[in-house]
Image (cartoon, rainbow, N blue to C red; front, side, top):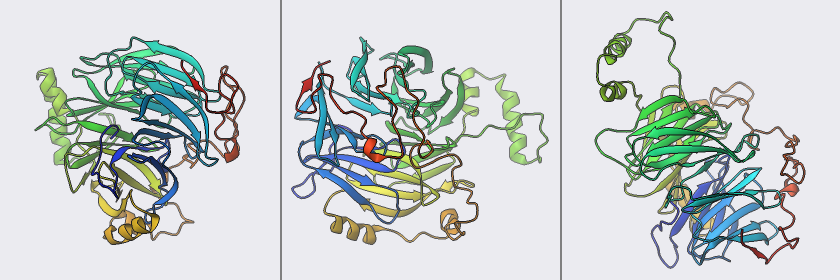
Length: 447
């Protein structure tokens, strides 16, 4: 919801932007008075871990995982990016660019700054400018995505302003990987999964969502969000295990799709009417026009959420909170909705908590108690009664809170990196110690 204000007011400032961090454990929001960082590791409590009023009208705020590094851009100085260590209350450095900054993306190796017709790639460990991609196709919304996996920092951005081409760029080795002809219409949303092996995309029509393999660029899945109307898809997000994909738009519905491969046709299956009809459609599709057969092969949503209002820009993410799968939706009117997801049967998701993103901690806690709902005996409510010592089917294997890296593991050195970063020591974050000119702060650099 960057660049879009929510319900304004003297005591409730508008929401300029909202973004979840790379592992969806934190929510950053920009307001007319500054920005706030929230911890979203519990359902019943929304903890504000930091609040700043130094920069008004913040429209970009991005946090690096659970570290102290946060990047801020305000409407007052839209060409300048400020990098802060928010726990120390210090500015690490700032950079000024030739035009308005439209988006910033982070992982543990790279920091990406997207302008309308250029992209800047920095080494996040010393903020050195490594590469400038000039004369990129006009990209007025600043659409881009960066994989959070430090070993393959893939960058995706539009390859055309008129059709849905995606350029996949290796931000580690600074080379183009592939071009994916994803849609007939211009792109509206793109995102990588956590490992950087899948890329999801949607066009401005908003009816079809496609998933591609990375780096090959092969189409793996195709989902139909709807056929009756075109919508503006504002957010796409994979679950940490890449088994689900959620999409939010300017409508009242959030869709969750399940990424599952259907068994080979030679497998023995229990004969059912739906299976029989499916085989009939598959056989018939070879005789139908490509447009019709393609529509028949598209999968519908596995689960859905009905929001209370439509017409607002929302940001959604799939996360595991307290060992259960959840859908989080941050709306431009300053609310965070938390839903339970049934990973086995799907269907309509259950709203379990609503949090307000404005007001004092006490006011937000009171609002959360009054607005939170008691969930019926859904999958999540039932699974919550299972002893924690036993296996829980919703627990994501191989996924850890530090973004997939085992505690104490050292990130391998890259040729551009000044040195390794130990992930189990928060004081190592942010890894940036000095700006390019050797000074610590109050120095504006122009790449």
